[in-house]
Image (cartoon, rainbow, N blue to C red; front, side):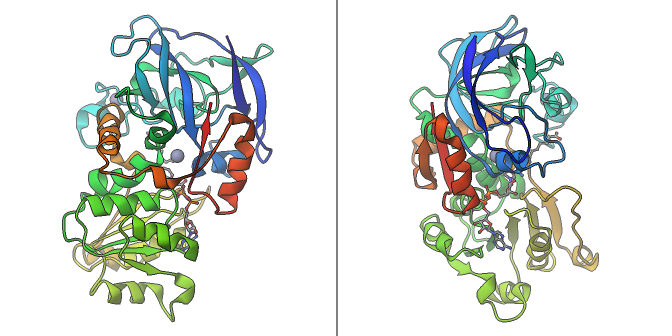
Length: 369
Ligand code: NAD
Ligand code: DAO
Ligand code: ZN
Ligand code: ZN
């Protein structure tokens, strides 16, 4: 079938709106109509060429929501009409990783997904007979796409696509890092570095977990008001701190953070996030994705004296299990997504959305098909 897609032909160039050919689902695969997709920082990172694993030409996008149109042979858990959220972290429930119960990083389709291909090693997308690659197993910048069955979370039918698409990455990454990865407990002091599409969700996750002090750190003073609305209790702009930022944060939290989260992708901030943690028990979670080849460092004594450094991918969420629950939290008004979706646009204006992101003017832009 012919589909409409924003194609990334090469790094550093704007996306190009094209008619693309899409093959139907093969065994274990599902064709979905994408109804809405968010634009995430990671799409921009790949499009910029900074992502060492970025492959072209490809159809980017990994934060969608849509409806099942057709299922391939052997698909048992989904049928046409089901509402779904694509998962860039699948959940097969049978690989060693899934069965370990220690991680959400299902490896069942990881190898082919990383090459921009479906599990049988081919692409379903093409233009004029030439293959166009999938991206993060999702490719939600097309109005129809094909995914493995295990890469789709079935969600309730009354959830609005243009809001819950954000649960496909940003919401789950931020809230999940607090609840599933760090397991923040009531009364904890939390410091969040970076108040963008991820950090604001860390803040609302910390509030949901019952954190006491929630300190937000950002260079952009324009982020303060929204962060306060989501539960931030103290704002720190590093440009306004006299002297050492770490010392300031340790003093503010009366000894250090119980938990800190790096939501920028800056290796210097990652160090500060670790070092502002409380001696003996502070836990620092890296969420931000640093540029190719960058490294983190600290003095080992920071860890010897009880601080813990860890990371979180997709908020530690097991997609098919946890994403429908997070959709329920939204529908029950336990979490706020609406105020984070600052812009919407048709597919034809998707490049405007990336410009808004680059200028720091949007939290989330959503393309509505
Ligand atoms: P964003 O651009 O919306 O937000 C980043 C924020 O950091 C902005 O508010 C900016 O002003 C602030 N900032 C930049 N430099 C700063 C500094 N030196 N000190 C303090 N604040 C600073 O980005 P986002 O969408 O929230 O994504 C954040 C990071 O998370 C990115 O690296 C992204 O790739 C990554 N990410 C990780 C996962 C995961 O599963 N681990 C998932 C999605 C995104
Ligand atoms: O290696 O098993 C694996 C999968 C790793 C994927 C984790 C992705 C998290 C960071 C990328 C940002 C996603 C938007
Ligand atoms: Zn993302
Ligand atoms: Zn698995």
